[in-house]
Length: 190
Ligand code: SF4
Ligand code: SF4
Image 1 (cartoon, protein in one colour):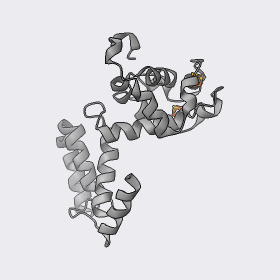
Image 2: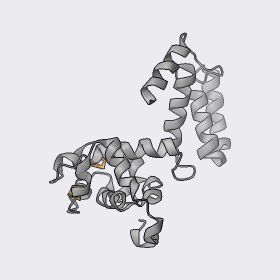
Image 3: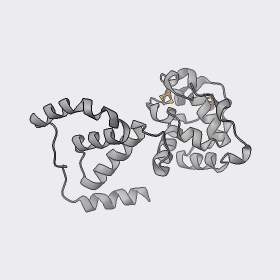
Image 4: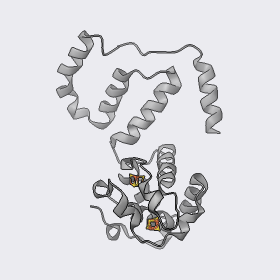
């Protein structure tokens, strides 16, 4: 498990505006009222797999450890079960904060190198934005090229089987009216 101590830096290197941005994006000013009781971490079914527990993520956001938070596995392992949010004595919407952190990481392109979940999120969005549909074969291929290139040879036999059974389309699927969809997505982003 990574430790906060390993990453302690000069105060000038922290980003004091980070907490403000996450509060605005998640609509949760109560973030600053966290009493570090640890209820969220003990409730979270996935905290033992995370590099920083939810309690530590909240503390790090508040103190401006932007790079460490955005590069953590925690925000991507969060399964949005809302258990922490329900139990928090200060009614801090921790799950919504995790969502805000994921959005921020995708927007800024900051995440662990070759970490599959944010890569998958970006590929999914880009494919649907461009074609209006997801073609799994191409999306999986791009994901493996970016995240697990050395594992591609081991996947070839399965790829051939899927291809021969017609389960691995070579042509991307597309809908009509893609420009309309792109206009809607652009408007939603603004
Ligand atoms: S349960 Fe709430 S108050 Fe307690 S550490 Fe987690 S976020 Fe902070
Ligand atoms: S919403 Fe995420 S952080 Fe909160 S308990 Fe569930 S998995 Fe853990």
